[in-house]
Length: 421
Image 1 (tube, one colour):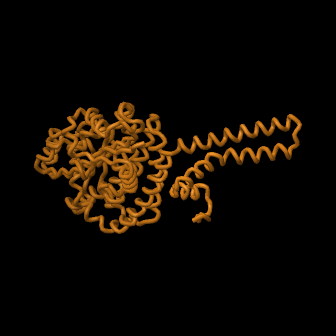
Image 2 (cartoon, helix red, strand yellow):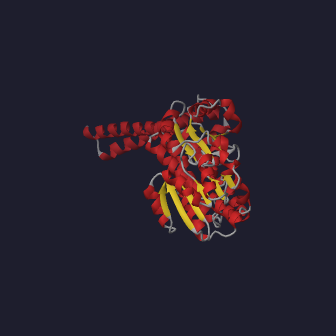
Image 3 (tube, one colour):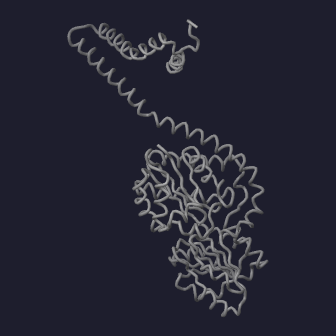
């Protein structure tokens, strides 16, 4: 059964495209069920740096139908989306899945967040009963491979992430952060990491804004800060020297007008803003304002690049492990293609065993001794189980089919040298 991945990521598409094909958490369930129109199994991974659809297709289904479904779901013409897409099938799809789980395909080499995101994507798909034997096995294999890479290499030894890069960039702008106020929008894993890095760098004050005020207050309390609702953003924005946003909102949270008013109140003291979200949380037009330094996830690449050297040797080792584990999974996959043959053979063997046993028991009921019944059982079972194979080998010998005879020796674990050779 073909395994296929269709997607875009930070390497193939700018944020302007990635945000158009992202799936919000609220839409994920509907999307997974909609995809069943063209595939048998599906998992959708949607993060700030990538949107990927992992599917198992019927043999007759075309790759293009999956591309067309993705474009149609997001109301985009295929021609607009096609230049940015990558397609991976079968072995290439398996290798890509393992590389993604290990952080080898991430913007930040070896970052661990993607593994959790992939696990969450599988959980959602499993809850909706849209996965099956192939994708479940593939994902579990990817998770175990990622664990091996984490424990057997030093790829995760140095903390490098988008959150780390955002805070590093803030330090370049402000030099020291002790007197600065940071406004964090969102309360997910990325924002939690941002908060930790800011605390490590002794940020002066932290505000956390989130749709759930309880979550905002809980996270802010870890850094001695204050939690607010998204509705209070405009009131608190003038206090913020640093704004870092990462939510799952399908529309921008901060517009140009709101930021303009905040700058006036601040008397145009500069504001540093990082929009990690995809789709974007901060309107693109905000970058046009004087005294605002607005960066997106794509702009963090140069900062991240400086911190990758220590991970590259470990990544080479990890790539070798991924190659081995890809081969292991492909061996399992090939076996699945022939499971019908194995099941049919076992079913026939079981039928022969039961029929012969019934006849042996009948002999006992008709007065035969146990020894006679056992002799009949052993002789008949041996003849019946070996009959088809013996006939096939006789036919191969008469026709000089040495290849089949060699396979028979391997299949039945016979000596490797034919005495007639």
